[in-house]
Image 1: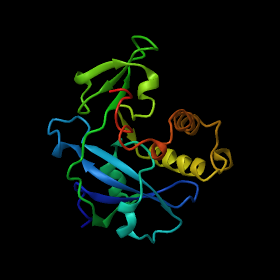
Image 2 (image 1 turned 135 degrees about the vertical axis):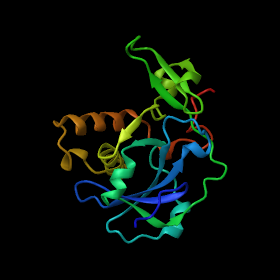
Image 3 (image 1 turned 30 degrees about the vertical axis):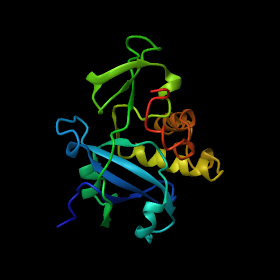
Length: 199
């Protein structure tokens, strides 16, 4: 029987294009907001290994690579062994739900909001410039998330993304555009990185 996914679990994420492995802390958002429509959230560490060998006890010394993300399709991805639950946990005690962005482009291209408590009913009007560093209030699918993580590592390391990914392929291109448009999370002040600017 496989390991049970629970709050604080550490996930090992197989990256595409033979780029090794990323690592994330799992947050069960229902522990904070029982009625949440998005229960599965991850915080990806700014830490990558070439092989499955890693020093888990050092993880807490690393910053995070990208803003907290909601994940779609996590249980089947774990069952298939694409992502693995490791024998290590970190407490999420004191975790504060970040703000998330919301773009209602069916209303107007300029209709931007930030959402409190991961709840679209608690949206506050703002501008793109004030929320472009936040993750959207939507769940990204596994398969796409791995591409985003890998591309962010490549850019961090000064590598050319186009040497690894086909930027004429739709999903890889759209993910690359997202990564380029988002300020590097680890470069933002810790006091403000999870909040709308000027909040």
